[in-house]
Length: 350
Image 1 (cartoon, rainbow, N blue to C red):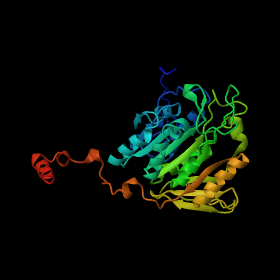
Image 2 (cartoon, rainbow, N blue to C red):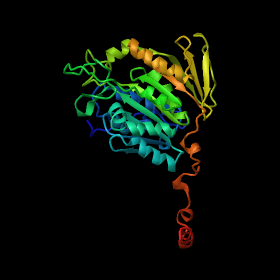
Image 3 (cartoon, rainbow, N blue to C red):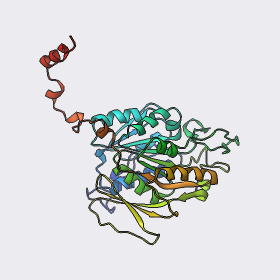
Image 4 (cartoon, rainbow, N blue to C red):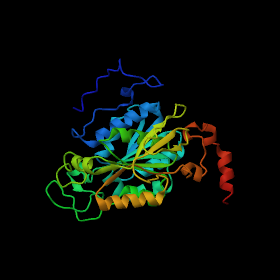
C-alpha cells in the first residue's frame, strides 16, 4: 500500500561511523511488482551507501521514465533527487554536476530509457566522462507499458504472448567500452554479494561508471523463452572476477587462493580488489573486455563482474577546467557584480 509508511524500528540494528542504520538510507515503500529485480537493486544501493559511511544528503539521485526510474524514490529519502523526461536524465545530471561536483551522482535508468529514446544522451554522458554512477536496470521489456520488447532484447527471446524478437540487441556495456568509459561492469540483481561492492567502487570512481544490472521483470519477462528471466540468468550468468571494495583507511586483506588478486587504487584512496575466477582475464584491458562480451553472446553466457576499469581518465570537471566551488557556494556579490561590471562587459562588444 503506497499510503503506508515503513515502521521505523532500528533499536538493535548495527550503526555505521555516522551513527546511522540501514533504515536511515531507505526511502518510501516500493510500488513495484512483488519479486521485481529492481527492488533487489534498491537494497544493494542502500547497503552500499551505508557501508561506505556516506551521509544521505551527499547524494543526488536522477532518473528518467519507466519502472526503473521509480527506484530513486525507494532509497535515501533524505537525499536530493529529480525525475526527468524520458531519456533526458543524463542532460539534467550533466547540468547539476557542472554547478556542484561535490555530490555523489546516481543515475537510475532502464534499457528503454537509455538504449532507445535516450541513447544519444547516454552516449554523450560517457563521452564527457560525467562523474556519476549510472545504474541501468536491464529487463529487456517496457514493463511500465505492458511488455513490449526493448532495445536490449536478444534475438529469439519470446514475449509473454509467445512472439519472438527478431531485432539485434544493443549491449550497453559494449557501447560504453567503445565510447571510452573508464568503469564498466555487469551484474545480476539476484547476486547481492557481487552487486554491492561494484556499486561501492562505481560511487568512488572519478568519472562515468556504468553498471548494467540484469534485473528480471516478473510480470512480463520471467517466462520460459525469455533470456532476461530469473531461471535463464541463474543458469547462464558467469562471474568473470570476484570483486571486493575496501574503503579508505580500513585494513586491507587479500585472498590469493584463486591465483592472486589485482588491486586498483580509487581516487578517494579506497581499494578495488579483484580476485580472478576466469583464466587470464584482466579488467584493465579494454579490448579484451569487448572480446569477452562478444564471445559471451555467441556462447549464450552472461558475463558479469567488473569488465573494465581505468583510473587515468580526466572527468568532465578536469577536462573542462570547471571551478571547484559549487555554484550554491559562490557569494551573492560575485554572482551579481552590479551595473558597473555589466556596463564594462557590454562595452567590449560596442
